[in-house]
Amino acid sequence: MSDFSEQEKNILRNSPLLKHLSERNYQLFMAISSRATFGKGDLLLKEGEISDDFFIIISGTVGLYKKDDENSDPEFIEKLATGETIDEMRAIQNRTCALTVIATESVVVLHTSISQLHALENQRCHKAIVEAIIKIISDRLFHSNETILNKIHEQKRKSKQLLFSLFSMIVLIIFLCELGIGLYYTLNPMDFCNWISALPAESAKVSL
Image (cartoon, rainbow, N blue to C red; front, side, top):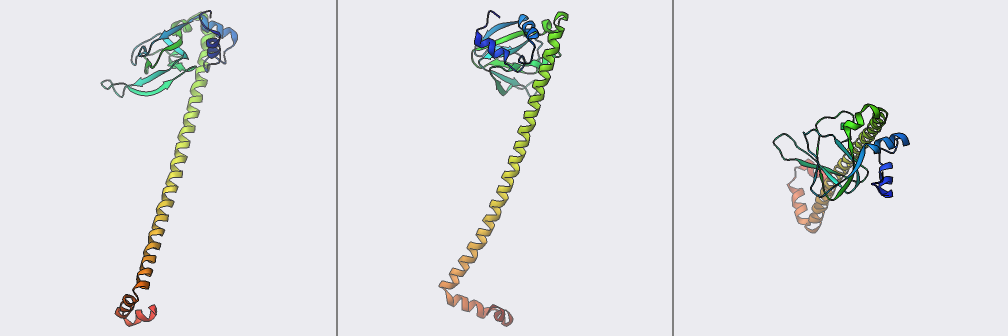
């Protein structure tokens, strides 16, 4: 912990992954972790490769990238910033990296070894970390569902506005047509008389 400033310690202790740990588990986790720095453009993780590392961002930002298929170029997904965890799912079960992670600026991270976290002497700490990861995933799903619902409601609201606008335009067009016809015959009464005269007798009676 001596490698970290007080501000960095506060960031780590209040990060989503570590803030619910007991002091004992927190100290165990920090004992198997270290401070690391990456420059802009440096690769932290590469999609499809095995890595023993996962990270918590202390400062700076990283970009997440993923391929559509093996032959395509990685596409940018989003950025992660201070306090966020990078590819924490592999702490539950270490497998190939799901994403490519690249520093978008100078980045300071807490680097943790997954194999050390899985070691027998750290099982209690590992269990606490898994519980924290499950909570993070649950929160993300909740917020994702909220975002989806908000988008659905927004689309419905826009659809109603569009229908109302179309209806208003139709009513306005009909009104303007009637107004135009009325003005035309007001300004040209002879045309109106000629039009009436041209109608069949029964229709003329109804009109009159």
